[in-house]
Length: 293
Image (cartoon, rainbow, N blue to C red):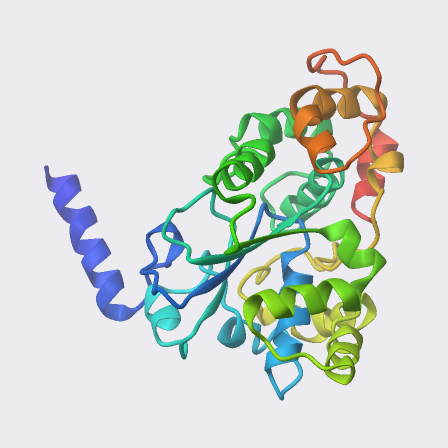
């Protein structure tokens, strides 16, 4: 009883001080739009791309949370003060309240490589943590509150795919033809985008520029503040890294669980015969190489 009362007092105090994170319980307005993805699917890059379309000031890690705020790191008060109509970033599984959604999806084999590296960076994992153990947690949804990759993706596709208020885009397609995909996203969001503004947004959101910004601003950005400086948050901006980072046992584990959804999304499977996760560990050399990807 005392513990419950203390917890309630803490929640009330956080609300008064504006420190409570918005998260899943964010108040949603009917004119809100969301960029939704499972973590490490390219949402930061997409936020930069769209942000550089709608902002006259170039997007950086200093202003991104004021232009397209992340509901998982910003307070409810901060997000409530964003000028409407708001464009917000979310990792949540299906939420029927979201009026308009751009859902960004990425090959789960690359997602797990990037997510492992991110969790090393923010000190959620110790150096050398077995990637096979990590993949098992990734697949059973125990990493975060927004379910597994397959659970998160399927929840949106089953509920919204085909809706005029839902746009699915693949990270790989965004890489292959950035300007064309960005134009499609802009049209969906009702953003006026000329060829010149699209070129500007693509240039200002290049992986090189984002890496340079991370070096000068990353230490103060709420998402990675206090993280390891020897592991970059912004990766190479390529696809298919899993081919050299993961061994066949780990790939088999991912494909055996996610294979049907991967095929639906156009991701070819590498392993022909699927067996459930065997627990075999990736080599120590390969684990170390993940830090450099």
